[in-house]
Length: 214
Ligand SMILES: [Zn+2]
Image (tube, protein in one colour):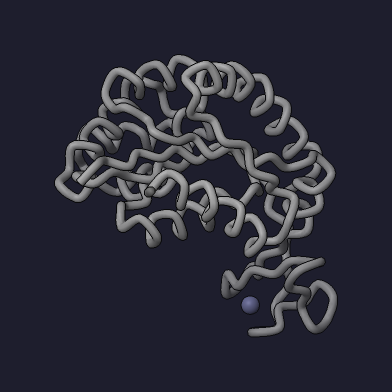
């Protein structure tokens, strides 16, 4: 059987995780999220644990460490038929590194307008006590500012504040353009309208996958 190596890119709040999970189920290949991998490795006493120090400082994990963790993951048996990679590459040098170790068949780029990303991310609220998550637009609590589950106060995480998100988006755009050009030249880039709801986005991705599987 042919390999299916897929990369999903998109700004924070684009729904990369959700859509990657569906692609993974549809194709029967593992969903590899570099964010999840780093979180898993945080408690390990291996060399991967080095990533922890960077994450705790809020810094990006250096490429050298990132590559070791990723290369190791992509060598596991479950990637025999392919994989869905989410959260990597973050910049052009990572894209080139990936190209050296794996042939990428499709890159799905979730395109979301800035105003929609801001709406999605700044609306998030989390319960300081039980950790339940809410969203002012999509999953509002019964009473404003109060957790429906346990009655404690709801907080907005520092990461979800408007200015922080604007900064992240700016950085994202600067780094993603060269990546998109890189994959466009290779003929593997597929742009998907990520402004719509989860189901509509998934329908668009399904069409791309069906053509590819044929
Ligand atoms: Zn609560």
